[in-house]
Length: 210
Image (cartoon, rainbow, N blue to C red; front, top):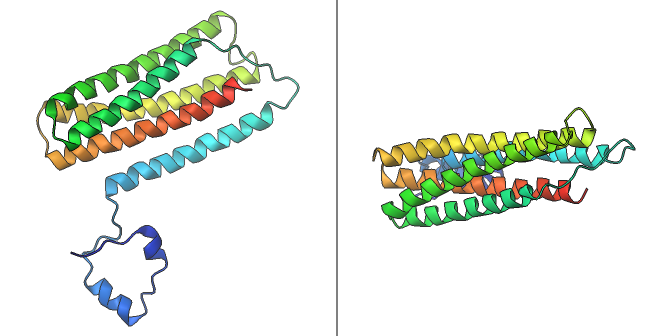
């Protein structure tokens, strides 16, 4: 079996050496051991992490200015956090079911995670409505604007995940799939949902303690 190369191993190779040349001649043409889909999701996660990190840095700097006024902490944000935790948990359970080719639990899991994802988004909209009904508009204060901006960007990332979830669920229900492909799709969804949970923890913690 031909060993695939990791990205770090490839960086430090010396293609001009004869020993490396012989290895390259036996290579199957694929540069890395990671699949294209996994590389794609990791690229999205890296780019998203950079974007959120920049917002966190500007948030931390801007809150030191005298006109910064803290927003209230709606209790519903805690409920939404719990929903997102459950969402990530059930996606993990769904991945385990896909590894076991347990189609019945895969279907149940996909339905549950979809319901929880939409419930989270609906809960976030209710939080927005509650805050605006108390005159906490984005134009009223910089802290308000950051809250709406950060939650909106996180929500857009979740909607992007729902697009991929809906495609995976559609393929599964139509039974138009091969098991390895389905397992790969569910694994990528689960990874992305875990990532969204971590990002939310950072954002929620930042807004909670500032």
